[in-house]
Image (cartoon, rainbow, N blue to C red; front, side, top):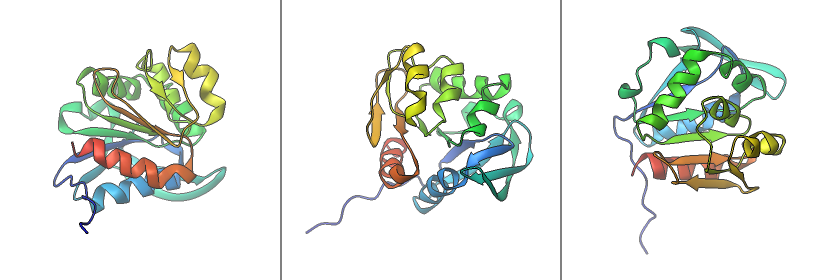
Length: 188
């Protein structure tokens, strides 16, 4: 019996974009760990370089350091993008033009993007969900449909109907499947 193929991201830089506060910690740390274990280089970006406060739902959790501001980050320096959820995180990001432009740049460049939970709010603002199949936290389904997406209630959705492949999941319980799909797409 052969072992399942492990996706490798050897040396690949993967952008993780979060707001200065409000990212769901486990939706940041679990994909980050998956990228590291696959040999990739995760890099934390925010609206400003410096400390970012993650949350466990509505409770403040750990602080991390964003090495770059979205305004100073170049899409060309990364192979893919991860957008963690949390309610306040994408709400903050979608109000920041540099963050929205950074996200849109991945789609314009045809680079893969992985998003979970409330993260699609930033995608809506970047106008990149039209004619795409996507899942999210259930409360976003009307927003996504109004933005032209086809929302489905599934653990993970991989949509290649566009210039870039989009991986999406609903919630922290979906993280094992989300991370596996993300690595498969990022490693392709």
